[in-house]
Length: 228
Image (cartoon, rainbow, N blue to C red; front, side):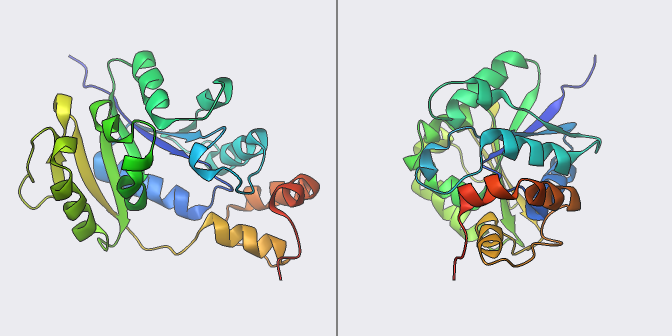
């Protein structure tokens, strides 16, 4: 009997994708023994209304350039085909229907976990997929444990499983802490550098930087200019 395929779903605005995203995906894939990581750019992020954001088509192109042909990585544009706000709950429901035999892991930062009560059906995400919560060098682990303790209904009555940083969720899912290296790179900082005319070299894959430059007019229209 073939083993169940393990798929990581890495959602985000990727505005733009940078090496921190890519390194986190590698760390999560190795830590969780994932067969595949799918990068799913959000088309219309409901929690970032009013934030300067590149067109979906350009963000998707940047992701495809960043991922390239790396084994085990793939870009999924499913949210671009869905009308209305891009809710993670809807994405997990849809993906689960497309891959019913796969074990799904939703990759998220610790900050996203803490904000789940404010997301659309956010506290129900753990019924649809395992939640792989990434934090840098374990610095957020006490806060993750505190969040779990403060939200017993989220776990369906489960308790901390030893000291492995793993908690049981409903329907056989798990919340898993994934320790990743500390890389202080953010999309907001890259956008700020762009507006100030400063180089983002080595914060982005070279192909992504070239594509941003090639689309300078569209990028500046989205992100603005002369930030100082």
